[in-house]
Length: 229
Length: 214
Image (cartoon, rainbow over all chains, first blue to last red; front, side, top):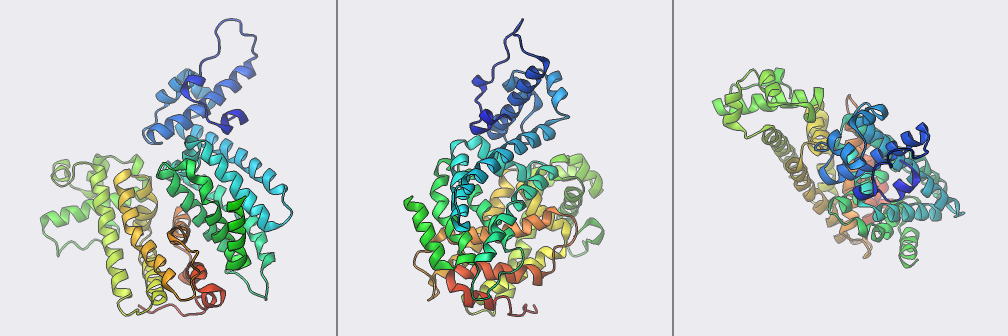
C-alpha cells in the first residue's frame, strides 16, 4: 500500500477506476495503482465485514478493479491481506523509528514510539483493525505474521535492561509479556470501537511498560509527563 | 482429548453423541482450522449422521461453542480446586496461574481450540472467552488492596497484566508442539503481575517460590 493510502485508508468513493482511453500511464503505473487500490479495498472490506466474510468480489468492486486483475497481483484473499498488513506494519515502523530517533534517552524513545503508534492507529479505525484484530483470527499464516511483527519489537524494549540498577535483572522474555499486555490493551479499545480514544492509553502504557526497567516511581513520573505533554 | 482417547461409557446417548462431536471438532480444528470446516467434515470424523448433529446443534458454530464451554468449565473446576487452600491474594493468584497453565499444557488440541481457534470462530466464542477471562482481571485487580499498592493503579493495570499473561499463552499456542515448561513461564508471569502492586522486592520472591504440587 502506498504511503498516502496507509496514512489514512481510502474510502470506496476515493477508489475510483483509472480513466479509460488514452490516459498516458505506463503499464507499471497502472499495476501500481491497481495494487494500491486493492490493498486499500481489503482494509476497508475487512473492517466492514471481518476477514472471513470478506470476498474477492467485494474487494475488486470496492477497488474498481476486475477479478482478472486481482489475480494478476495476488493468488487469493490471504495473500492480499498479508500484503496490506505488511504495508501498514512497514509504514508504522518507519513512523515509530523516526519519532524515537528524535529522543536521546531510551525511556523517552519508548514514550515517543507509543505516542506515535497510538496517534497513527487512532486516525484510522480500519487500519487499526487490519493491524491488530483481524490478523490474529484470519488464518494461521496471518496469525504467525502478526506474532512475528509483535515479537520484532522486543529488542527495542530489551535495551531497557541497561537501565536496571542495583544488580537486579528481569526474567527472560519479559519483553514478550509486556508487548502482549500492550497489544491486549490497545486491541480491547479497537474492539470496543473506541479507536479515537487510543492516545488516552499513553500514560498507562508508559507506566506498565517502563515499571520493570525503571521502577514504579520513575515510570509513574514519565507516565504523568506523557499525559501532560 | 482427541477422539481416540474418549471414554464414553459413563454418558447417556445424547451425552455420548455430544462428546463425540466435540472430540471430532477439536481434532479437525487442530488439523485444518475452524474456518475450513463443514458440518459434513465433523459428522464424517465423528462417525455419526448429519441428522444426529442437527438434533443437537443448530450449526457448526453452536458445536464449537459447546466444545469451548465444556473445556472452559473444566479449567474453572481445576482453578477452584487448586486455590481452595490459598488464603491471601498472591496465593490465589499463584494457584490460579499454575492450575490454568497445567490445564492448557495437558492437551495441545484443546489448547489450540480455546486459545487460538476461539478467536476465529465468530462472536459467540470470543464473548465466551472474554467472559472467562474477566474473573482473572478481577483477581489481578484485587492487588490494589495490597498495603504496598500505589494509589495511582487502576483497573487498566489488571487488564494490561491479564492481557500480557493471555498473550504469552496465545503466542506460544500459535506454534505447534508443547508449551514451554511451566518453570520458564509461570514464575515470570507472576513476577510481572504482582510487580505494580508489591514492588520489585516482593515481585522477585515469585521467581523463587516453588511451584505448587497440585
